[in-house]
Length: 296
Length: 296
Image 1 (cartoon, each protein chain N blue to C red):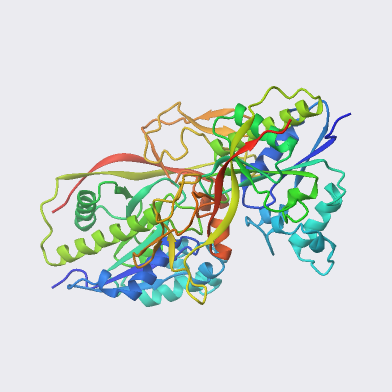
Image 2: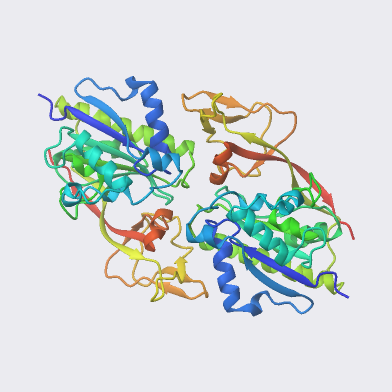
């Protein structure tokens, strides 16, 4: 019996991240591309009105609306809050979902390359990480397992297994072929792996896989009343997953002053200068580099 | 007597092009940076509500509203059409403007580097082009002199002399330090040149300057009902100002088909895959490489 019977690929959770939206169109025209023998694959266009208006979202970030309490709160009724409830009913419900795996396709303006974000470090996810790493040279593995899947507010947390495919750099509201091709390839590797996992045919994998683990989020320099006072330092711009050490310059204020990072660990920045995070004056996330044991 | 008595530097004509907006703040805090002895310099924040809403524009593109007939048409009354009339009253009026030179600061998501767009190939502009080229190694000179200044619909066409400083690549709604520094430097070179020009102290310049001249605009592949069918080919992405020849691949359709360029000249694409141009399904502009005589 298969572990995974039903897989959903979600695109357009953010309406101005175009790669997933155009891949969904491609796969809807050629469903064989995402078909595998041992499970059903469906596709879902999460935020069509965001795409229509060429915006990340109309009212609030759809990919932050999937906490159980928020899904249960019928007072939360704006467009994305309503979409979250509909998607949860369609693919979930969260906690006892009819979908076994959700693959949610995202773009970032940051120079993160083809990144797969995993929410657990269990047998499935560690094997998947090792498999994708072995098949795709420039793939980056990022664990965001600092909280339980239930406690995550991401769309993909509806299912027991949720994955975010996060590819950049790509400006909002643009399609880049390199980014589209990476997303297409990474999604295919994930589907291939699920097929092998279901059939108990996962090939031999290394004992560990190199990855990053989310640690913290840094804000842009701002005044007491929230006005931005500076920007990401040019040494850090585009240097996603390049080590940052205590004392390294991290921000430049608009008056030219350099600000250095004060930290007690080797940090690996990512989501550096992501456009969508300016809403909250976020500058970047920091992670630690880790060797994750592959659980067989 | 000075030729240029009054110069205006305009930022935020597009509300999500942040470099000019943050430079204006910097210069307002330190006016000496843009002060020169022989002329007055003022700054103008063209589309504050676009910035407030983090959008290029609210109703229509402000940098397309400066045709004389449109400025005179009081039926055109939306936000940007109204801003155009106010700015024209403040800096113009177009045709007999009290401002001698408008420098309008823009960003592009395309990999155009620090580009200066000039609307005339007269003595002032050709000398300016040669001066900026000699002072800034990576500066790109682009002439958009295919029509008269009066026939241009750009904001900077209000004045007899108008310049667009166009720096990329930068995602919309982001500040990159490298891009900000290039814009700051290029603007300073322009102000320095105006000062030298006024004082009749322009140094010796080469007889010609290498530049590009706008030729045509290409659309993305689309269906009869306007749906996008493809994207810029990965060979062309980021290759702004790199030659494109008849038969070179230019687009990739979403089904994988490659489309080649059919043209009878050596083309130099720019504004390649610019996010803002998706509104009209524009893929890129093409120019010709030219050696422009410097008129003394």
